[in-house]
Image: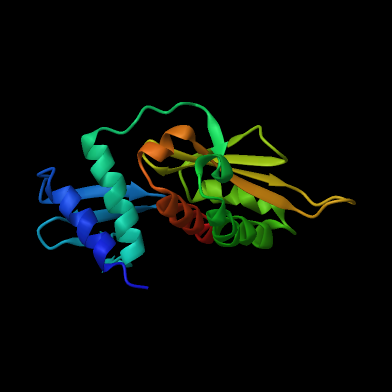
Length: 183
């Protein structure tokens, strides 16, 4: 899939803010270097340019951050509550929820190990709950329920309601999918 239109628009939106030539942004456990002249986003962990969908997500975040990030509301909402389009939920579930269930279904305590790699904390939600700092000012809550006699394992990803002022629905699906695959 070509992201050419979206990435060009993101770079133009950033250029309209007259940013510094070089900017750094932390996303999960990695730091990213943004060179606005070369129009490159480089992962400092691997020293290579990121894929277009990652660059778009980082640029969208950066544009909002440079304008001023919204204040956190403290109100956690599900993807279904954020998305006005019901058709996005199957993609969200497949990219974000199912990988978490698949990876941690037989070892729910393993989910706590992600706190050794990512900025975040344990919270008292579900059987296991974590809040990860995806970007500065963008917390994401992961909830996990263990399998029992009646039901299989289940998980969810919740967002502070302010995320709608930073990312569009498609970006939220990409963000959640990237988090799930990084776990």
